[in-house]
Amino acid sequence: MDPCQAAVDSCIDCGKCGEVCPISMVSDNSTYTPDSKIKLLSKIAAGEALEKDEFDTIYLCTRCGVCDDVCPEHIPISDIIQHERELLAEQGREPERTKHIVSNILEKKNPGGFDNSKRLDWITDDLKLSKDADVGYMAGCWVAFKHPEIAQATIRVLNSCGIEPRILEEEQCCGLFMIDNGHLDEAREYAKNYVNYIESLGIKQLIVSCPACYGVLKFQYPKLYRDTKFEVVASIEVFKQLIEEGKLKPKQIDGTATLKDACPLRHMYDVPREILASMGIEMKEMFDKHTVCCGAPAGVKPNYPEIADAIGMLHLQKASETSGVMVTYCPFCLYHLEGVSQKSGVEVPMKDIALLLEEGIK
Ligand code: SF4
Ligand code: SF4
Image (tube, rainbow, N blue to C red):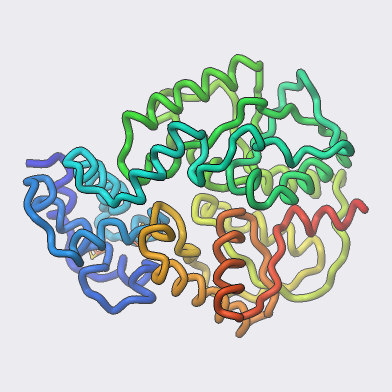
């Protein structure tokens, strides 16, 4: 019997996971609920043929983890889905686009297949960066290639507080897509090389702009490889601390905004809200004390764009109904939601929190 089967069998069919799952929010297909996904384990482990809906549901998961948070039986639902994907990959049954993105990461060091030699092109002459500081900075793929202004704003804010971090000249993808899709052996090797490289620079603290990279370096690498000798901190944690210490004085904006929470930082629910409160921004929540994934991660956007877009639209509609202005702190959420906004014509102004803070130091 598969080692995860006992956990699957402990499901009491309460339906709580389906109430919070972003996929279930935009689809009434009963095969797409989180509990239905994990109940396919025995079939997958036995190598049995899957119906189309059954195959799709395994890959219709952003691995946001909110189902894990609410399951009364503490079933590690998102890890079981990862395991099902691992089995399907071993059996040669994963989607072609998933295979392609994994090869991009292994060969080009980023999921989008971008030219990795351009990863640090966001660095402008005005940014003060150290060559030997023990505080490092990692932008992450979606900042480096799609939203470089987030990295620039972050460094300017840090510089204004006297922090001049060291850039990782050999920065690479954190490997989250491989982890989400069960390519654990490749991800382990990747983690090992990257951790050893960062430690070889003498980095003691690594400030990370992308919440996904934060989650991987802080929580996944220790599971895949070992604890890192450097501390991993999210840029929003650093911003909040600098504000509390009086080193960073945010510009008063005195308006309302809604906040797109990032799934890997959902346990830091109050941190971005306190930063916005320090600017005089009144929060208008889209969802009631609960994080809803943007719909793009873990292969949903490339494999099922219509579902990813429907979840994105849910956010745009909620934002329009609440404040009409959205603050983000994840570059991938921003990239996805801006794309949905452009395609749909539903305009919601969006801005990363680092850019709001940058306005205060101009
Ligand atoms: S991890 Fe997120 S997307 Fe996947 S089943 Fe759970 S709630 Fe749904
Ligand atoms: S929340 Fe847990 S126990 Fe309830 S249906 Fe989902 S997996 Fe089963």
